[in-house]
Image (tube, rainbow, N blue to C red; front, top):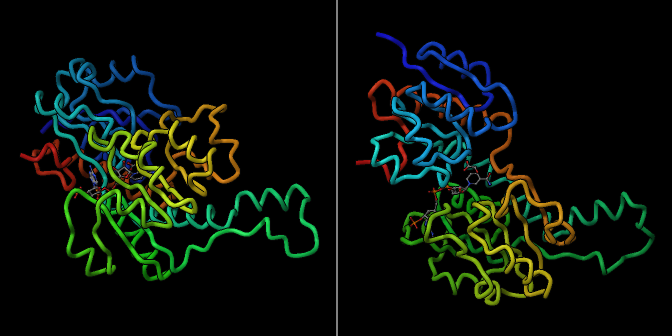
Length: 324
Ligand SMILES: NC(=O)C1=CN([C@@H]2O[C@H](COP(=O)(O)OP(=O)(O)OC[C@H]3O[C@@H](n4cnc5c(N)ncnc54)[C@H](OP(=O)(O)O)[C@@H]3O)[C@@H](O)[C@H]2O)C=CC1
Ligand SMILES: O=CC(=O)O
């Protein structure tokens, strides 16, 4: 049987490359920079399978790809896929849930601790030579342990955060999803509550929902107004789940204490974005899953999803909305 043609739109580890070459005729994009749109259009016009990571897969791109049968993204989020367009054309879409949960949760914990104990700010303070003898109360921060953590989006990553927070830091867990999850409630003694209750009661708030039409700007001015003045807000989901102007205002007016952000409405973030000059805001370049081990696992999973679907099998991680 002839091997399918595939385009791999991002650099991948050599063992994943070898696996793909066993099963398909491959064209690899070798550069770290994203494939320019026109080049992507030319490549997808020739292939049955695409392995990607972030660029938008629109109906216009799918129209330019008459042979394309499968698009596999090396990410758990798939808000860059036009799902109705996939459905209409019968294109299969896959993603990489699970393998990154612990790595993203570690980063969320790191942001909570960094924001609470002001680690970035105080690191700068020492390096800039401001440290003097004596106990300086202006350097004090907030505890994380034994506090109330509210998780909005208690899915794979949310649960990995809850585990660390409950068993590592003795925190009490509140959560808000569209559906209650009795297992989560039992495992972490977590309490289900409305979004408003969670915002009002939590000392730390972690936003971990996918980006959908329902969650776009889920957290805006009204929601920040409900938070405690000592609240630490962490977003590692997608930038568009938060109204960034409202977040800036909440920080400027001290409605909340601090924020940890791995994602922004516009990425890369604008250099003149006010969030970048606030000492109580941790800013990271969307690196939630970015460890070598986890990225290798994600690349292999994305490759296995792609090949399984091209072979007519049900891929391990078919996008939920595309399951029949
Ligand atoms: N910063 C980074 O590098 C990374 C970011 N991400 C982002 O994190 C997101 C979550 O990943 P993961 O945990 O694997 O996803 P899951 O699908 O496992 O969990 C998502 C959770 O969000 C809940 N949810 C969905 N819609 C809503 C809503 N409207 N209101 C409240 N809760 C909602 C779901 O519960 P229910 O269905 O009951 O509502 C579910 O529990 C990804 O989609 C991605 O955007 C992921 C990896 C890395
Ligand atoms: O943002 C990363 C992802 O896996 O989704």
